[in-house]
Image (tube, rainbow, N blue to C red; front, side):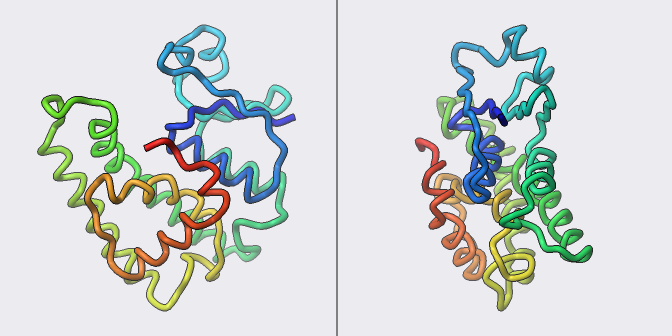
Length: 202
C-alpha cells in the first residue's frame, strides 16, 4: 500500500494529498512530527536524506519530490486523469507546473514562513517585498494565459491546479490581490472538496 509521510502545514505535501483525493487512491498517511524534529531522525533520513516532506513509499519504492510523486501517481493511476492525453497538453502541464515552482513557491515561502512562524523583528522585509513583486509579475502573466478559460490546460481541472492550490491559499496572508481571471481561478481551486479537506490551520 502507498504510504505518504506529510505534515499538515506543508504546502508541498498538500499537493500530493490533493492528488490522492482527486484520484481516489488509498493511502496510509503518516504525520511527521517536525516540531519534535522527527524529520531529522536516522529512520526518516534513511527514507528522505533531505529531511523534508512529503515522502512517498510504495512497497519500498521511495520518492521525495512533490512533482515527481504527482507524475508517478498520474502514471500508475491514470483514471481520473489530471493531465491531457495528447503530447502538447502534457508538455503544457509540465511547463506550468515547473513555472509554478520557479515563479511562485519559493517566493511564497519567503513571505509566509516568517509571517506564520517568526516574530516580526526577525522578518527580512526587503526580501519579502521583492518576493511579493515577483509573485505579482507572475500573476500578471497568468492573467493573460487564463483569458477566456476556467482552467490552465484543456479547460479542465488538472495537475497545474493541484500544484498551485496550496500556495494561492496564502494570497490573503501575503496581502496579494490577484487580477480578476486569476482570482476566479483561485476561487474554483479552493472550492474543491480536495482543497477543503486538506486546508491547513492558518
